[in-house]
Length: 509
Image (cartoon, rainbow, N blue to C red; front, side, top):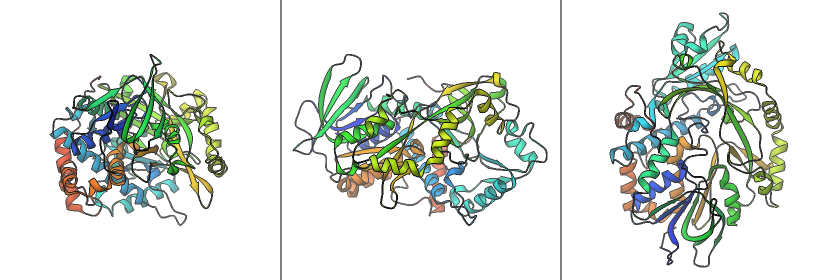
């Protein structure tokens, strides 16, 4: 789609709905590609990145498939499928390329404010799980993206990697782990706010908080008329745009439905909530410095993979465990209990019912999670930290995730775990639905969106040249070119200051 300015005072070339990492990434890409574009960002809350992109709400920072076992499922024949892990690892490298460009250009300052180096560890116990992890490691070693990964069943080595996890563990228990020192911790809340702070300083960019999109309609000239309500003053206004991106996290589906585009028919959403156990004992926090991921329980959604996770949030080292899944009818943490009922339409009720029947184990799992007592949650933590005590931990509410339900020829409806871009045939509107790995692969997702919605521009020499400047590997495969990956990693490691673990400061924007 070619953007032609709408001839109206109350208009913008582009409207981005939702002030999260996706809108921030797309907004910055478009302004670099076409500096003259006018962009309007609409956010229903009073600050950017307060929902899915917030550090406490984000289910996993720095997803690079180094340690997340849900990205490497075991096949029925016992072999391990690593295709998704390779794709995600490659996408994360692309994200780092773009972030390095932002730092080099002075568009985002202090890389230590949003990214730091930290080991990514997978940990399992039991003979079958150890066998699985060894097979996983063997398969991943065939791809240079995972060069440097270590595997060990040696208890002394594992104790050095993760002392809290090994402390007090039964001596005869069979255990194994893998470790990638190249792992990172990313504060997407800090990164998102930094990008928006720079965007709002640019000519033609307006950022509106406390404003909610109530409706949008396609006009005869191909533009979109968007009705907006101020949540504080209750006043309404309208704006026009040639291109609309709906990046509102769990709130994207209801807005997409209002668009009426044929491509949105049949889509539904299944909300999953989450909670963390947050460590409040600073002595314990200082003893752990890694992201340790295990295997999810049977029936658990992918974002519920348990992990004992070190993060830097607002300048402080934090330690959390979880997430514990739950169920609510809200699509956003700050949403309404009527979100799910209102999303049920004639065109998606059959896919939603079919997906529900096909995922009864998930429903049972979520019910069990909701019914958990504090003692139950502590027992789950003790599987990763045997010495855990109740008084050292408190419950922290995490963010909402809305899993995609869509039409499927074989099953009528299927529940998807991942992200999905839904766009109109003319490229005038697009929405991002779903969850994990989300934020970590935001750059690749938005590049895909540009290819769909701006086909002519992305095929042009001018845009290709600019995209290659922002992302040097653009148009090539890091997963297939070892030398290109080595050059790329060397650059991003230097620019993002990831050579060594450094103290982090998280500015409060």
